[in-house]
Image 1 (tube, rainbow, N blue to C red):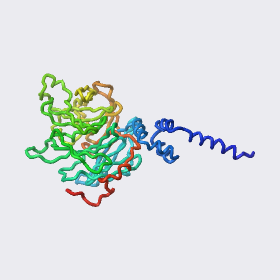
Image 2: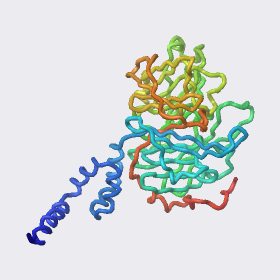
Image 3: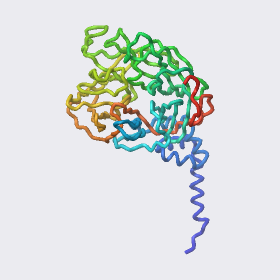
Image 4: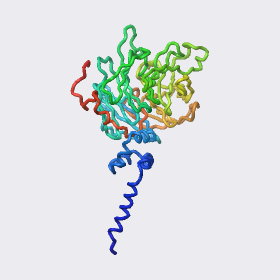
Length: 423
């Protein structure tokens, strides 16, 4: 039987013509519902599809729908007397069902230290530069650090955030210099913060309203603002939460929730010592309180050891300093656990681990409910990485571009051959 070639080609031509008649608005709605892997293939389909996929409004719309993962960063372990070989840093991803996978981080080098995750962009601290990576697109941006001599330049003195109204990404450096008259082990003092907006040519200095800031206990970016813990003598238990608006670049001090032992007084109380950490749950700022552990002072960058009750207070209204108890979690003293910083709760589960490097997930039964005897599910063992150095962040795959910022004056080559002035 002979088939007429014209009869075969005509339906294909009609099908292609039908696709080409789809308006950009309709195509936008269709593509929004597809996974990121499909969008990466469709970038090569035609100019119309590519223009829609790379449109900034589409990129942010698709990012808002993208499933969120929990990312566990395990810093490298240098060779030592107890550990004979260098172990490079690793990244573990937990998907929506908490299945674990190892991220093949071709863009992560052995001396990279993760310090932030925002809209699919990962920020790494390096000796002379900062590196921002989009693992999905493979784009990378290397930036110089703030000018001037830096004392004890540490990865947790940097943070990164996004403001949805301005669509601007900003790096923040908490400028730290030693202060006379303060004993070793006290919280860092900051005269100012340095702010860099992606695409601009320089860092800018903004005066900080308070000197003592406990950014080593976590910094989170929620709804266009950065949050961290600071000392505040007039509040209950001597701490407060600092809010820095990324649009107006203004500061606001938030009073912490009032603990039961503090309800009878308006000033510092006689409540048992507790340690404080900042975190994010369901796109809300949360303050975490755990029993104070004398072996790990609250100003140290060690993960919180939970032995007893851990409370998670969610900020309901920043303008009114209104908090409510989201979770309280009891961990038996016979089996203490650690929580990585700054984000360790996702999808009604909490990520915990022990001193031996075993990581677990536990179910959280609901808002404000006490969890005393719930089963743990072992996820992995991350030895030889150290249990007190783990970090965890919320992460999603996006198409957020970095090449649009490549022309800024502070952008550097991937391997900067010399140290910047002041080092």
